[in-house]
Length: 570
Image (cartoon, rainbow, N blue to C red; front, side):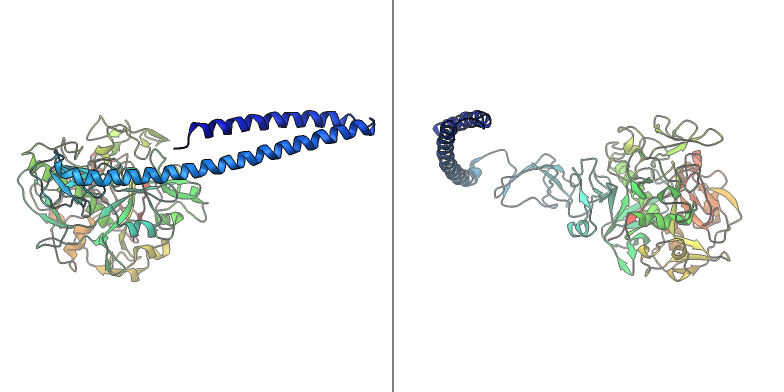
């Protein structure tokens, strides 16, 4: 390490240079007053200045020499220190065999299949000296958290239903980079509220939703009460691929979904918390605020263009995505119920404490609270409808209540998927004569870039909807009658209805519905150029919910309680 003498000498030089500088300034002031003095006086001052300049140059040379010596000394110190640390690390590695307390000592990180006997097992990587602790020893799906912030031992596969972090995931690095997204603090830590969350160039928060295959069965025992949902990483017997993971003829591994409903920021539809949600009506945070009434008219189908305000790859999510998010939540809750013999771990699924055992939402606008849980209240966005009901801010609840309004019951999930605002969903339309159309596997969702393309029939296949659309409002559920078919043949109408979240037949709906499905509403209207809405809004009370589906409106409709969010497909 550099010695103190070098430091002292350098300080002395600095002091000398400062004094010489003061002397030079004094001489210059004196010289400026000698314009009328004799030549001898002026010559004397010139000689004094030359001498002073010589002294300054000498001191500067000494300072440069000393600095060079100091830098060389620092470099030598750094090299010596590095050599010492390398030798120490080598000795430490060699001695690790004699150190107790670790369950595993390997020259690699742990994997998902170590399967320790219990949680809390310790692993040390003898090459990197990083220490891992097992926080979940689920068979062949172990989770090890490392001593580095956000690091983890085994997160290559999505988390199992019933575990912390289930329902979201870690996107492949190459996908994140190609789409210009960035990790957040905690993105790779399942115990962090930002697990699976990413940020784009606008500061919008998006959540990676990994692909899983889904199986639905009609089982009436508790906790299924007519609908058992299972998920799998692979397509096993009875499991089917959700439509939202087919794009442009390719099966994709996942997609990014806005964490929050869209709000307007400098002409861009962003996904940020505590913001005023965009509506499709001039009276309430209008979509026209993204530009003007001409370029962004206040109507439902403008949402397709509005999604592109963040970039060409952003688009309106399919209705099947909302069905999939609901399925993830149900599978998660049911596994927890099974594992706890009827007691649900609320740290893993915060809305699993009371019926209808589904995400809560702002659907009691008169009190800015959830109809199903009056302890959950939203901050007001400033808008009040004529009947006194109010709208809240995106994710506008307390930190403690945030997990109760996400799709998976954890703070890392997608927020406000029920209540607050109806959401415009893609993938299902009717034409100008009322014929029904379902999105093709070959369609690239990103091509539905404006109102015209969203209703271009070449992107869809016509199908016959067997439901009686008699322009009435029903609710999901009718006693113990099966509501969803669980069909695995993707070419069938039954599969299409499941993916859209519509009841399998007329018998699966009723006027009052069943609590199992939250008594969520089904607006069974036959419309030309229909625009499907999902989730309900701040005015719908019990009829809002993750199962709610609304066929009442058309593409040119405009409403103060209808908004949207975007997704991003790799």
